[in-house]
Length: 295
Image (tube, rainbow, N blue to C red; front, side, top):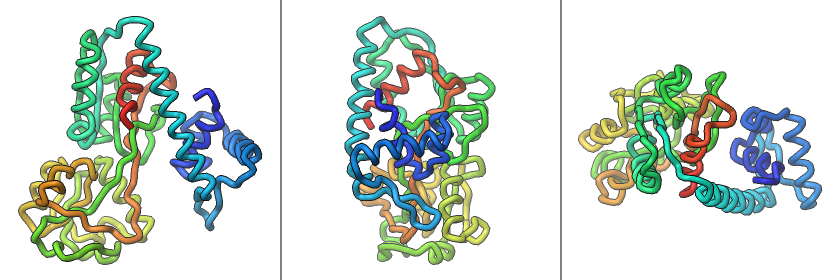
């Protein structure tokens, strides 16, 4: 976007942290405060409010976020479409993606991308978030896509798309008549989790930690290395699991699995691009813009 203040505001609204905004945009925290202050002065409203140690958007902030994100999407599409007018897109693109992204988010994007740009040779490595970050650090891939909350020093992170984690159970099982559970009640349910190094597990640990619950306090009956394995286990047992909502669209539609609400527990995260350079190579940037055009 041409207006950097709006870019600062969008990042601050998504992270609800001026510190993280400064880190992601490579500016100082006072600079973030200055840009937000200029927007508040211009529109004569307060965009953020503090609730104890937490930062929240005001109603005016929510309105501005909705408008700013539409502007950002339109600008990104314009930049992308104009870039296609300059020259043919060719070359080799080595991608790495964490398991959830590789299985559920990326295949349709790759199908459209390779159809649109047949001169680009695409390869993809799949693993958990730690493995993808390691591959990028070792120059084994050009661009990674992960769902982890932590940030590895020396790598750069750019938003791909938001995601939500949900608690699932088999229809007809013991949880079929339960609409919601509290974090404390979750501790007593048989639970299936991903393996160590998984971005999904990291998000779960962080969210539960905010509720005062540690992983060893849970009734973990199994750890599995993929979401597909977890879904199959849940379909054939009385266990529950926490997975990305994009991974269970078909099962929810068919009625095989159902969502059980988690009271007072926000399990949201961002799917992120990771790249070694602050300004990625042209072909990498081309793919990033293409992938984000649908979100």
